[in-house]
Length: 277
Image (cartoon, rainbow, N blue to C red):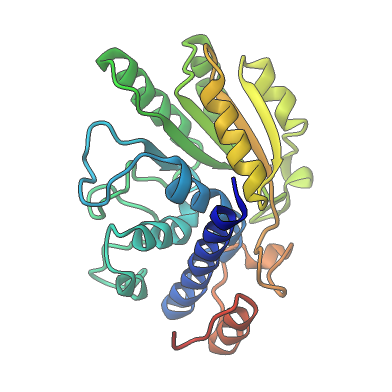
């Protein structure tokens, strides 16, 4: 990628991070830490990698994205709004009565949401089903699923990993947001999944391990996944929980707490924006 393309992605991820902070502050609840840690990954998917059309959210040939760690809904909502699936102004309705933007994504209410998620560990199983359907139907779409590193403590993840390897689902890409913190503390102390890459390899996956905030590395890994035939790809993306906001970075307390008005103003300032933009 050239520098101009990288700058476009950097600018878009900045807008998405500001959207996340503002909507959570307005809602007074939600999950900033894991939304901010995965913002660069989701930006790369929606604004570089995936074949999607906001005007045709049910287009059969579209690539699919599943937010398996559904509590990070703000990052998905921000990306969908910035992509044009619905007005950015609607982000202010997050978690409010009657809003399409529920605390966890609902495929029944919002265009662009491929799977209702929130009960952790289930996204990869659904991704496998979509990928198998694509192969049976002769379609060339790809399926991307974002998992948390705490989420992969769930046994269903590994059943799905085994199935994807067995069926040689080279149209599936699992991305692990390895920010190393979960609601109860450091992932390594709660229930360590390390070595993460080796586990996916053992289930027959091609594995890329990257800096999840480096767009060049993210794009390179996604390109490599397209080249791999006969096996699925797992991308272990090393990230920082709360990325971009100094007082949230690497702080487990910001897993599920929303910033107040003063904190919102500070965060937006650090992210290059302002509260009334």
